[in-house]
Image (cartoon, rainbow, N blue to C red):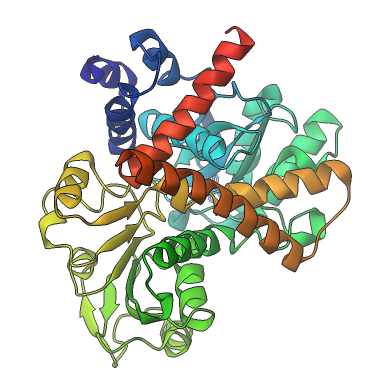
Length: 427
């Protein structure tokens, strides 16, 4: 198989996340029973790709046109498509394709009945007012039309989107379809059908998976020094859960400005209070200020990249001090870096195993919306723990039995199950 031609065909816009995902798939595909090039092409192409041009009237009266995308990759296992919706300047068709494929593997690995999808609008949300963001969200939802719905495709929040964005999307869909089904989107506020535990789910899920692995390695999570790159929703929840619930020592955190590092540990409450007062973490006096790139190579036991893709690459992989990397972001480790880290015996918990907590609790929200029966936070978190542990055991045990890395084992299981479903359905 030659993935370069396939990647080039997919990449009308350069996307490291797509290139990385397809390359990892190619490395695993040759070990799948009965897998051939035609099956590989099928699993790397999407069922549907939607490109939109969205003219929006800005607050000053000007008209600006934004590009929007939605990719629905594969739902051979049944159920609607499922995936996040993001606002970011770097959103393009290639990126969305790669992330949609990853969503397929996440849902397959954790055995929830969704196909993989992803969407987004190319924009800088920091340059838009709240009213402009609302107009943009509603225009995107209108353009999607019948391509989303409770049994078709169920969007969720992602980078730079949140419960408020999902509320607007739900409302616009309800008006245009005369259908007030809460199950059309997830990640909604509690007041309009959101699930307890949804906001913390991705960060908590990454911590749960890390703890399962440490237990198998006969290590205590409270003894670990942790660096978290990215202090948004996922990173901040992961940091606070590790710090307050597990007693781990957080020695480094960062956001888009840069990072803080203190080998003796950071006081997260103090840092968050400092940020509220000053509007930045820069200048916090009890830690060294480092760049995001520098933070990745500081001394630690656990490194959790929770920001953007391709932050760990061939240029810095040799300098990583951590013995375990937890991919809380999507595709943060490039193919070249992965080879280097494997050779150095650095364990990597891949994104499809480390960060499906959000889609799992989104599934729970969808189920609760459909049956109109809601669970407590304790019930949601208990179900999240059980679902993730089952997925972890599948991947870890297969890794031990075959000598494969956790990434190879996780992808092997996810791709195998999708292929089996495809064959059984006669596609």
